[in-house]
Amino acid sequence: MNPEKLKALQDQVRIGGKGSARRKKKVVHKTSTSDDKKLQNHLKKMGMNVIPGIEEVNMFQEDGNVLHFTNPKVSALIPANTFSVSGRAEVKSIAELLPSVLSQLDASSLSGLKKLFSPAGKSSIPESTVEEEEDVPELTGDFESAAAAETA
Image (cartoon, rainbow, N blue to C red; front, top):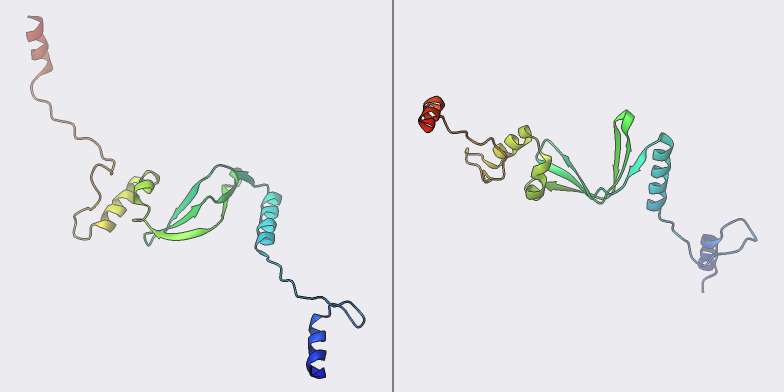
């Protein structure tokens, strides 16, 4: 073996200075778990409490997409109206989440959703899924005359 090449290999594995032990391989540490622990420690210092039992979080964007978190870690500081959501996020269209997301939308979002799916004015959303007021039929006749007829 070449002595220069051997010297280069020895220099790569030495941890400390001259006379220190050599290691067999270089260990690479993963930092994702340590980053998560650091984040949780900072949130705890701020006084945020973990809210257990949240299965999913949906954040609606103006372009019609949804930022969807499945089984996130949610922390909250209620007096400051501050929430922290961490976990794996996916960007999905509203159409992918449509049946389960309808209960999370308000009336203005529903009308915007209706316009989004109907470029020519026809809605592809069935009317039964959109909550609307029921039509009240017009009154025909007079209650007083009907009541007088029943008593007579």
